[in-house]
Image (tube, rainbow, N blue to C red; front, side):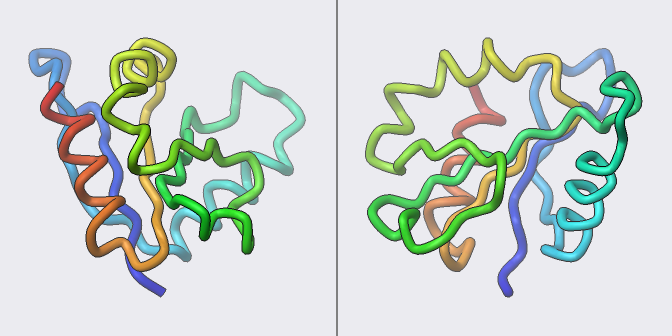
Length: 110
């Protein structure tokens, strides 16, 4: 499977997010650990934004938020406000070659 693109806070001095890649295995580990943790304060603050369009219906990551790529530019400001406290914001698409990376770059540069 293709890597996921994500942003994480690199330093308190920088408001911008750094765009990096995360393997599906690492994301799965984080999400499974969060699902098993009963104490919400101990869960890792991660959100998965799935930017697939109609292909989202074929299967998706449980708990992910679907924001179709064509709607992403209009939703960007709201997503920034809604997820500003997250340690990482993960962007996912079918192959993580176009839609996911493009969304991650837009998120990190806003």
